[in-house]
Image (cartoon, rainbow, N blue to C red; front, top):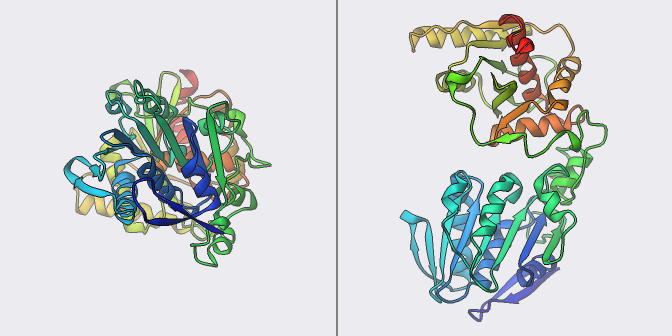
Length: 407
């Protein structure tokens, strides 16, 4: 049931769910709203900042990427501030807002954490905290120095017990408050939203994405103890340090593939006895896939390039060769990979690399989706990324003479 809450800076009443009201009014120095999809995380994060903003103080809003900051946090915050009749001015060129009492709100992305280090703020809100690195959380904490009563609020959907948010908020310490909100608790969503999403996911994923629980998927090949802060990296080593590299493409067009599968473009670079990985997983047409492979080749300049060519997927190879020949006048040597072993067996070959902590994955949308698919294997709905990852490693081992095995 929705509750009405009054902003401290005006007379307008705002309807909040019970969990949103608890989060908005929490006085602990660190507070988290752990919500399912559609639970109103960003909405209540913006409301809380408006409610707690003090005159002439500076506040910080952080989102995982600039795009998310611009397209989600910025417009939601402006809408909330206008709704509260508390917006004085916006400085779009600097992504800054001046509130009615003179408080300044700065909007920054987590793409470059070092750019946050020099700030000194009275409060901060991190939206989608489970999509950022622990380093960003630690840096934002340090921006709260020197201001009595400074606070930090995080809003996010859980990402399992191996994620740093579980270490911080799974068993909160003194001074840390958590508020949990299931998607179904939001009365402002369409009536069929929860049922519609539940029908498209597994029971355990529904517990995470809709019920806001920290869960380890049962029956998975590599549970939470196989994953940690070492997995995600902000950048790959310089190209001139790579021993050998390969891009593998899983078009996901074969008869065994499931409806709605992602096509996967996965780079593996061998450096310092580790596998450095960049992944691009999307639902896309063949023509867009071909263009995206070209972009990946231009960016990473791999030594080897392979396409899965089972069934009629070899048509993608022919389309790629046609485009490179006719439009780009550049010929990439392409290996056609014909898989005879079952996908489950192939992906399980990744086990030793995961157990030895040898994977380093670029921390972007594609990399995070790849790791999620690995964490859910073989219970997850999709395994296109792990399949392409195994093919890239196999391409290196078989074509480069087992170079990695010897390093």
